[in-house]
Image 1 (cartoon, rainbow, N blue to C red):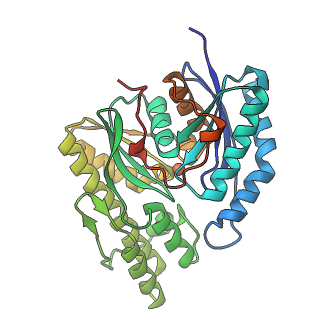
Image 2 (cartoon, rainbow, N blue to C red):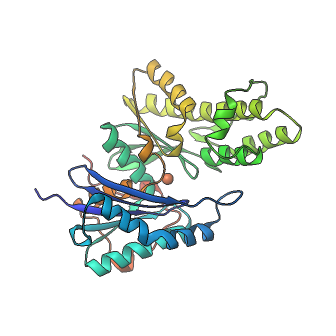
Image 3 (tube, protein in one colour):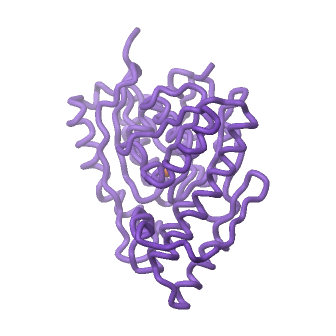
Length: 328
Ligand code: FE2
């Protein structure tokens, strides 16, 4: 069977990434530039301008690393959402331009699904309950009857955003700083723990932690309290999903998959349930183009291409909107 090659473009938030993947499961390259705000959180328009400035050099780098010419590419994929509108539009514009110039088909990939599919590819897990945690997303999901069903999610801000914002407010910087500083802390503060059914809420927790800082509490102590509270909430919901669905694998994806303490806590829970824990490798944990390229191939081989006219971005796309036709 012919090996198809896909060039995938990621641009939902900080990262402008371009990856190249083959339909035999090979990742041929994974190039990126990451926008770093001078202070505070991400500014969508500035990030999109950063992406536009670096787009061409990242595309070139991805092709060079893969040792391919543009004419070797069979399909172009891009992140269609969820994400920040201005950032998504930059990636989509670059993808449309390449697809139109080369006369190749276009695929609009759901960003959350791409995190999961690259995790499955890299770890070899088959039918996991997935925890996707990052700066912009907090989702517990599993593939049930052809769709990634939302089992639990955040009701307000993402887990990563909560910890990043705390770190910035404390003057230590975003993750992993709060977790590193927390190792020197004592757990003397109790913070609001909000699990509602299968959903979690972090904004009240962040406000309470920031108030403790204002009152002069030691940063390390508050860092320990907030990280442990966030992770405990995630593990509680994940454990319930695992037990309810009677699955035997967990897959951890997204930027917070790099968190050693979160991994340690999930591992303990998995031991209790004789479940196997799979963790996406660091290089594919954060946003990256390779995950879009690989998932683009899954879409493409399932016939899920889109026309230029249908290729508008979807900042609020949900994971359960997509028919996962490539999986049994
Ligand atoms: Fe992401």
